[in-house]
Image 1: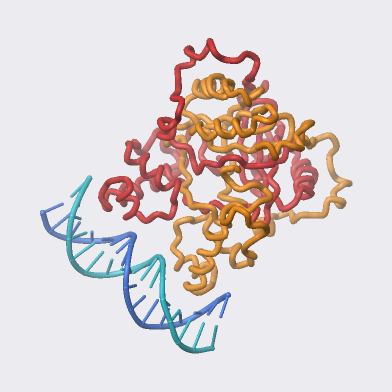
Image 2: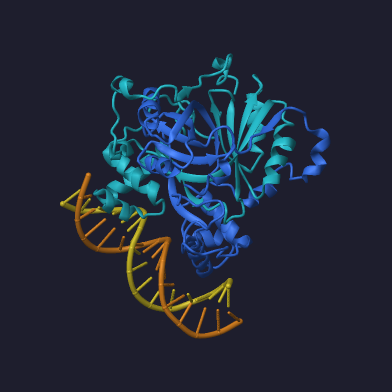
Length: 211
Length: 211
DNA sequence: GTTGAAATTAGTACGAA
DNA sequence: TTCGTACTAATTTCAAC
């Protein structure tokens, strides 16, 4: 099991539970919206901003937490200030049937901030934060390459992080200047040859089962 | 200027300030460590966990906030529960001299959670969260491809998010099972041909200046 | 940098709408 | 369900050490 929720399974709560435990209404979403911007706001202030009573705010707040819709509260830290000025992305090709090992090794690498399994040319992307470029090299050549599950890696450096939203919510979509149009309406004005979608490699169908 | 801190410039605070404003000692780092796990902990409880007095904790807490070492507090939301079950990475090739436009357009796309400028084959990577796969297609073909700054895109889907650490800190490194070794020691036992580093494309040196 | 006491605020319980 | 209120516990502020 992943450390964070899978795309088709409820994140927290009871292991065997199927389906959604809590129907999120507009007020729930509004609460999430506020909490995402200010994770330390008091429930009293939250109630006022959302326009509900204090008691109701406590009930909903606890429900969102218990349900797993809110996974945790965290402080966003300036990694440069914290001494980790170098960020890199490492794209990893993983040997089939060895995902479990790969995941176990990942858990022992504290410089890894994020890891996702992807379609396309590579199998996984990991993001690491270290204090100097040499450490990236050490990480890749010494640590990652020595994992039998790792077949190949490709590393790029992050030069600048342009945008990081606290967490995207469905309600954000309504604030967009260009609201979503159905796909068929867009066929006429799409510049050709600009984009490319990369599906899963061969044999990847069984990927999620052996993790 | 980026929405979040650049790799070589202090994030918050006064715009013209050069250098670090606050020397982070072990206690500062320990505070960050606690807040990263529990962003809603009271300063009183924080003081106890770190082993300092409350007044000291308040002083340091405020200093970290004012200095920008703590950028903000946020709730981590289960995007699946929130109705955004599809996550994709879009690698974008950007026309030189058009970074400003690209960034401006990004700010108007609420489904974009993260955007980083990278070395390697592409210029930028953006992560989007939407409710169904068709929306990814719409986003790429309708919105992104219509931006003149966008030369080409390549899209992959995220099948599973294996790991997301709240934010990596230097102190994490000491907890690793395999402490970092100098690079020269590793030359003997590195499997050959496994890894590849991808540097910046030609003309990318000026990349960060025209943003 | 620490402790303690006052003022404020947060969290809980419960009855009514 | 949600709201309003009263009650209890905890936190923050501020002062003296």
